[in-house]
Length: 404
Picture (spheres, rainbow, N blue to C red):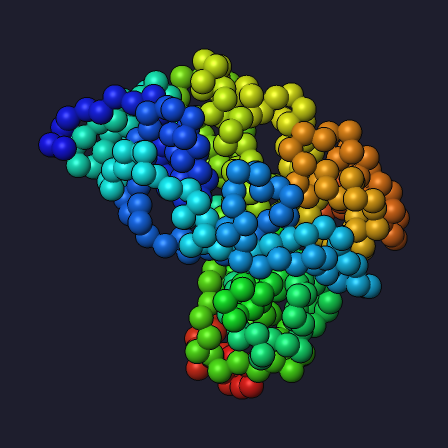
């Protein structure tokens, strides 16, 4: 197509991560004419995607799941087994399942995104009855953030911590070397189905997030405490993104934010892919019926759930390590519906409200509840000093058996 020409479609999707690709795929399958925009539409997705398997929509084939964990483990002061299947997604399998054969794909950068038009860096214009903005989020700045540093380790070397068929959803055991007077973090550890295990030290809810150097040091010390000593040549990944994205407002004449950009990232966990994919058909059905998809995606019940989860995010970001352990110990002592209401249910506001109240009410000592609800220490970790940024050589001198 020549530059500065225009294409007319029913739907234009900007951004071809799993969420945007899923929306374009399902809309085209429903008979809509669809265009999709991404600077590099064939690039491999970098992050590791995981989810509760019952969150995935039924139209996805089994091949999208790389690893199944029947009952992942949570460590607080005790071991909790969560009897709910969890999985790591296959990026290749997911991409194949979200084929774009019936979609007009443009490998270009969107320079302007409006309600009914997208202007591209190559001079082309895509005009659409509806535009969805499924691009990722910008850096968090001072916003409440999720920060993680992951290291990929072979399954045999990882065996002291991760047995076959097992996975650590949250490991709050105090073996990451962090001071009790420092912001808390936990370990996430999952087999990926390709002969590797991802060990990822994670911080949730801190304003501005936690530095990668701090998370890496904690990961190395935690692994060393379990007899896993690395060479420093192991591949790694990093994550750093805001968790407090607001919801889109129905009726506003602008592109419809979708996926993590549209508030579908869970404010307390940072998960977004499965929830977004499960809502794709809701958006497509609204388009086919001539309704504003934002109203169908975010009815009053779902907006209330998001509001309550945002309060949970603010509470999580001001706790000490001991308080976080006590809170999660209380939460994972609740029944399946309460856990599901917080972790994944889109609009179960009654169960979520009960879960939050019960979590606070059963967290001890009593005085810690004031921090959880925000009556005290609202900005406890703001501008926390993590110390100097160690270069590789000095880090190796401090942690000679573990650092790279």
